[in-house]
Length: 339
Ligand code: AHM
Ligand code: MG
Picture: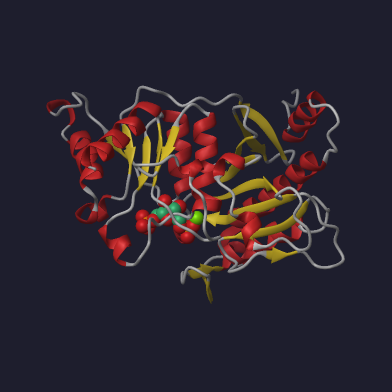
């Protein structure tokens, strides 16, 4: 049986189309792909290799880390620190910028990642994934990269994507020219292009939000969900479905395939803790926004385009509303009307 287009082949072809490139970017993607395969393997073997459960440590957000959070973070670091393509890295699991060991050359890219999004799902054999975003180090910056260098808005991302560890392992990514999905063929250990040029469906009746927080929501979010729940008898004149995997990566992947909207909005409870949202801007909201927008969707806080937010710190949070264009536009219009 012929092997389809591998992810390496895809990026080498892409590289050939751009004159005078060094190949650094293609090599970096290659290391990210290997890291995702290694994380996929650790996730897949679960209890058999003793990687489930808590790690007895907390991350910068005060969340108890899972063993797999720590393992995945280490895999991502080890795979990407040696080759000379990145200048520094940052992740959900590390308080500060990760500076490369002195023996390794510094490259021109900054890499941010959430090594295992939705990691509470590991204990129940639910879907989890890795999210990453690549930026260029600002022009003229010298010495070791600082936090400041990472504080770039999402529109400056060079590439972003995710690996989803579900019944099959997939990588979905964009370099700003559409979105492509690859499925890991476990028989040969290669990601094969299975979902070229992914586009978000316009017509939709799915929404994805944790309704346990309904009593804390702001009126525009409440209005949107109430109208969905009213179904055929309500102003939308159709019935909706609700889905919540508990891992943003799985919920947004479903939105990419089936259409719909994913919301993790700000609410009264989060604001009382001085949080603008739950999800983190640099390594969760921005990369997923880049993918969704490149597939023809929209990503907003309710009042602002996520990718235009100016980050002020590495672990900043923001409200997230993303998915099919018309649904996000509707929710944004409800926010504008409420102002
Ligand atoms: P994590 O990066 O620590 O796993 O947290 C992010 C996850 C998202 O994947 C998911 O959408 C959300 O947290 C679920 O939160 P909640 O438990 O409040 O529904
Ligand atoms: Mg996460």
